[in-house]
Length: 100
Image (cartoon, rainbow, N blue to C red; front, side, top):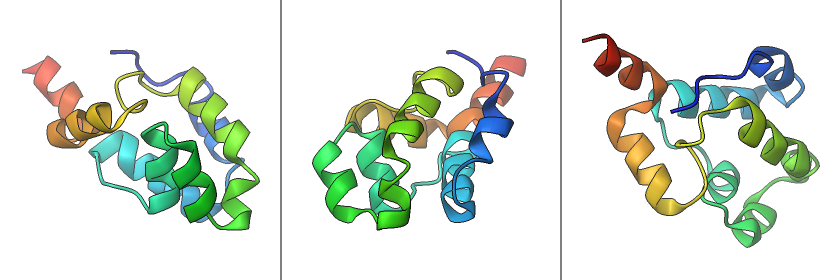
């Protein structure tokens, strides 16, 4: 599992506040986000485009780059990967399991 990239917080702050909150809750706790971010995380471009507000769709390319470069690679990419990430409770629970 890749840890958070060194630019996670500075780059996350470039997104709208509500999207920042959803991304942080997903990465840290495995909390299922809204439909737009679910589409992005599951690699379903059509879902992301059709379900996202214009404000969020404007950040689609930057969001994919952010996920690829700054986030754990086992938290996004397919519905199956998303389900596994949610089941383990995100990064917080993964860290706790490693420490135990």
